[in-house]
Length: 206
Image (cartoon, rainbow, N blue to C red):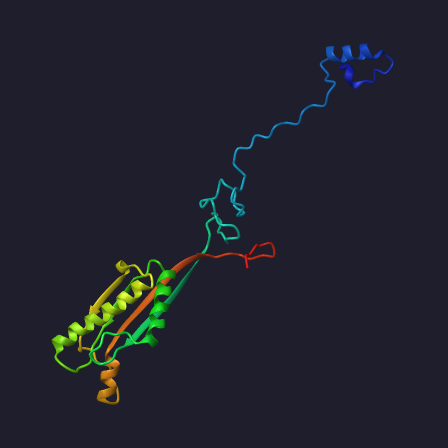
């Protein structure tokens, strides 16, 4: 059967042409395009360049550098902060010039919320060793209280007293005694940050 829609029918009236096209199975309208059968999710919801079907780390921060699995790269930042406070003979009063050092330590601990501090108190070899042991503990506790006053949680601070068992070597006995009346601490903080890739399109708040 020859389909009439393949030949011009201009010589027939319009009504006859439409009737013949319908009877011959021809359509008077353009065929609709086929619907693609997409078997996988090709979307990229977090815009990291890795499609959802392969993305093992959805919700990656904008501008983060990611691997083939869509997971961000991290860079570890590590810092340390020291505390070294000297006291007068038979005293637990923190000299004013050391308060700024304690404040810096408190700020450091605020930055590294997982870090803990251990305050070590000492005394000079003047007087009885039993008394010096108690004095060294009290010195550490005084520094602890100052850190608390600056906002550090008490649960993050530990104190120890070593008495006069670890004197500081110096050229004279007087210098050794002066340097031995101390409270020391060293804190290390570590934090992992997402490694970002800055482009001319990156937004940065000043």
